[in-house]
Image 1: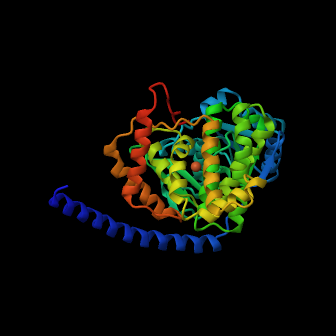
Image 2: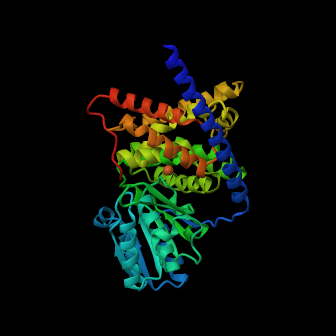
Image 3: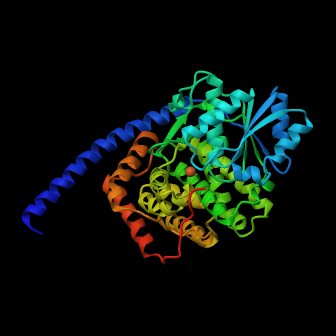
Length: 437
Ligand SMILES: [Fe+2]
């Protein structure tokens, strides 16, 4: 290498080191503020109904709360399959009228949310039931909150923008993934840029959720895998977060344990109702865990992969997760070892293992699970020219929102992106990642 190149390279490195030092200082200050805030901010919990009669119980609660006309938010596929009937039949039996909005698309935009809001207002609805996956529930949260506050959904983007309560909101998740029915946030996509915009407010937490395994049994295997790994990622990122506490640890460990045990069953046999129910509850627990502990680089990078390349959220998490476990391996060694023991991954032969060995074992088990549920680590269409912007946006999401155990400079994120691209390019042509659902 010539002297000029060496000098230029060392200049670049020192500039990046300086940028990283200031990024680190800002990120750590924000993380401390988030922790202080999470300790004093009460986050409501939805009433949880579980089992084959969960929808009836949810409707009973809604009726007892005085709802007269219900706005049902779903998507066209679920509506065509007749999934909302489990709720609407019960409402009809009890003489409660309803209006169905089936216009939710994957990664719904403001236009979609505004259209639903207008229909709910025009129909005179006074309660909302969301029946669907994360996209449906997030859109319903925004509609219910906007109607309750007599404002436009865009005005709710950011932290604690709502002045009044949301319309009473009830959720029937049809996938076991986002845990959105338990969380205080909702994501809406910008119509033009497709970047995701976030609204966070404790008033957004739904009043109740029904986890009905019979509704989830029709979920295809690849969606079961993607959404199930999303649950595991919520649990692991919440567990490794610097803002984790005893309460979030309980829910994160419960969710992780359940996914390791039941996701292979739900993936292998969709009609295994016990596995479906356990995964539904795990998704809910994952949501409770990250409500306070937050997430990390896996989600920050996965959100960008979704925005740029249209890859499904859970699949993007599954692809990024092993890289971030490796990144955090040293800083989170003790925590990962503790989790391995807590979720019963460790057998009698490993009682004398070091924390390092147990952390490695946990990471190996996660990799094994990803393979068992058929995660193909491919992102189609990755362009190196996008990596600068992706790294910048992911780093911003981390510093704005999360308290991660290990911070990395932008070059570290770009390095991970390059490794994902290389691995994707090396896969045979017929291998494909699932598109967003
Ligand atoms: Fe997620």
